[in-house]
Image 1 (cartoon, rainbow over the protein chains, first blue to last red):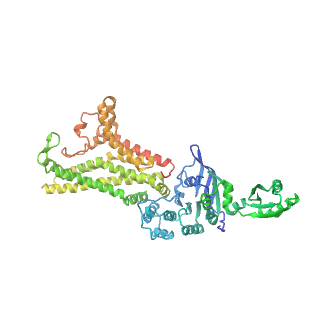
Image 2: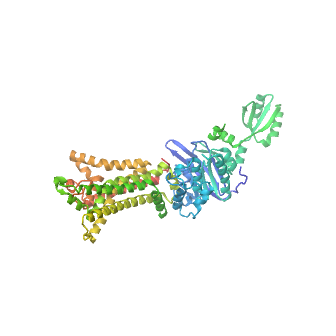
Image 3: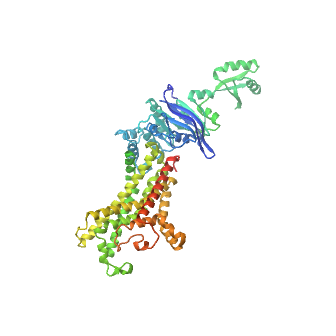
Length: 316
Length: 291
């Protein structure tokens, strides 16, 4: 996890009650979030949860049904161009001209952008490890190479905000590690990163703050620590677990009590474990075991969305 | 806007399709000239009522008629190639998914689509010019090998007429180019653009003929269609009668209820503007997603 928490600096992206409906289907519902200068904000959600639609609205590609997406103060639905100059983005799978080489694809982009310094294209190809293959046609690239070219294209204009949608998709472990290393580095260079990913361990490692989206709604947002704290559970065992459960029911700051693998799991702050032990003893329930339930972002995600992330589920 | 045009030009210049279309254009003109030159060496007469001799045909292939004849090729077969180019330029962005990349890198949706359209129009104009240049070169060979070396016909009036023919030809194919471009944007696909514009271009003469046969109210409809008005204007290009015209002759249109050249020009302009306006409206208003 990135331990350098950004001071809540200038707000560069704000979503205000953002909605997107396609007929009867609500893709994004009442989305509110902010991204600040120099932070890595990760946007987590299962497939079809509205992540790409949200990114589309942030980039002015998709018009909100209601609400606003403001980037650098510009309303992206009505006046996106000043802000787009300061944003580099790869939406969903990177898409480039198949008949052009990687180098020529970046050159076409550089011509459009206009203010790309000479030598920047080679510099970016070098950065993403495509210098040797830069003259090969894009259609001959592997998915991993396409992803790398996508990242190079976002950096071409030296943006202040970088939006990456599943940037490690298709990369080999070495490439994934490079990207994982690159993301915090970009933030340290003063850029902000808006990262859409389904790889929770990746998000946990690089993010300052995380937003979790389910069925178009932002169900939680905060720093990784805050979200992990939300998912604090205790593992308890007593001679009579049923009595333990009844006793826990009566303690107001304990919630979500359930049996898991012969234990009783309850949501309660780990810092109040001894207080809990005393309260149970006062009710003549004596614990044989009381330990923190190990929590990671995945359990928080699972708890909030009710479904495992695709990549994580596949790993099991 | 200059940057967007430069980028569009760069992409189309690097695209194989552009060069294939250009090669087809050149090849077609060379092929037609070769066939006609070959026919002109035959004995006897040919054409309607056997009015023409081989010598008539050879003289028609001389430099004086090189521009209007090359342009008549552009006005017929060139439409097909221009439609492919226009629909490909707009529709491929959707099939490749690059439409999002371009939209986020450009300084405005309308500017982006305008740049694309301008480059397509520029390349169509360049293609027509190339066909004319190839026609002039081939015609020069025929002229000089046949002993016709005088350039006395090159006067100010002649040059102005050739320039007008060039402008006229580009103008009449513009509704088809606009339709191909527009339908590719609306349908988010090259096939939609090519299919619509070529469908109309190829089917319209057949439908028009049926309407004329049907008579009554049907007979007046072709006067409002693209092809009939296109032919009315192209008749102003002075192609000698002995050369193939690839469309109705003055005699074919005589006695029919057709517009004047000015009315035809207005109607074609309305078609072109309407298609372009539709493309601009849809591209500006619609969410940008890949196909």
